[in-house]
Length: 410
Image 1 (cartoon, rainbow, N blue to C red):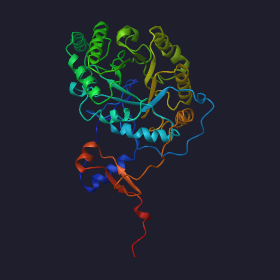
Image 2: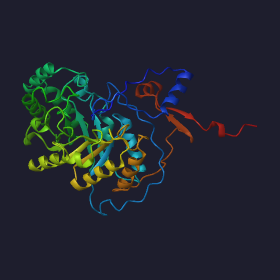
Image 3: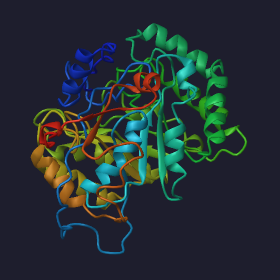
Image 4: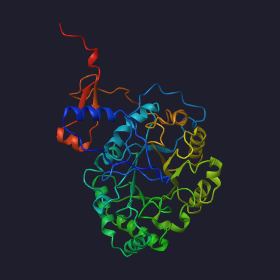
């Protein structure tokens, strides 16, 4: 259930050779390594998520297929995880163009789980996301929030049990109040909080398995703390991974009064499992729908995409049809290799299906080229050297790759 991660690249040397190397590396698509579990999300801020290639070229969009919902029918809000930081916001525009102007109403990112100061929403991490959310009333900002620090450091069950009991006793309430206040102050009091996601697995320190009763009490404390912030309108999304995993996710459900949405992270795995089996398996897609209906909650799919079965166009078609049929509050495909459809070139067949079925949905007017930014000459390509380098340099490095076309001076 989790793609492996890469560490942040080596420091950039401010010499010509270093710049040339950076340009070369920027043009190479990233590939995940060391796959262990299905649905490990990208690591933001403190340790970088997997690299993603530059935005693909944008050829003409295909005509809307007959399988799309009828004209005028409201379709489920959708988006894609494109990057944890500001680049995730920027890439939504290009993905929309690739989809024929389809409106991406969901922005999705993750808070780092390395230390409490980041789980509280470190300054300068959430601002661009808040700005995007406030750009239009019907947008959704979805934020995955870890419940414990050292969230991906392989903390043992005994220590997890101790930490969960601390959380259940209220020792960590103030961290969640701080996060709630930051979100309200940024003008995004209606953020969807995916708290302690995939708690039924073994990847995260915030897992439920070692002590489900303490986990549920802790969830209640965290939600209560965030709801105590004046002006908040948060919605809390309880999101296990599909299937039984380490513990049945139903054993971790903390109660209807502290859950607003019941989500599911669902990737195309394990190897050889058909989509029908993903529906029917214990704690699978159908049980998720039934459980949510019994508790009178909307559903969501914060993470989904390709995985163990490779470039599986049948999975892509069936999952999108499932989403259209079940009408979740929102869904966001995980768009990097091996899961993705736009930033991953390894899945051309599934990518074609995704594009055909979503192209033009609730289309908004777009400018396929856009104006040339101030100070950026035509034919100049920006080079991504990282946020701290750009801050040091006072902006992006912009290089001409069409120099050989220029006429020679007389």
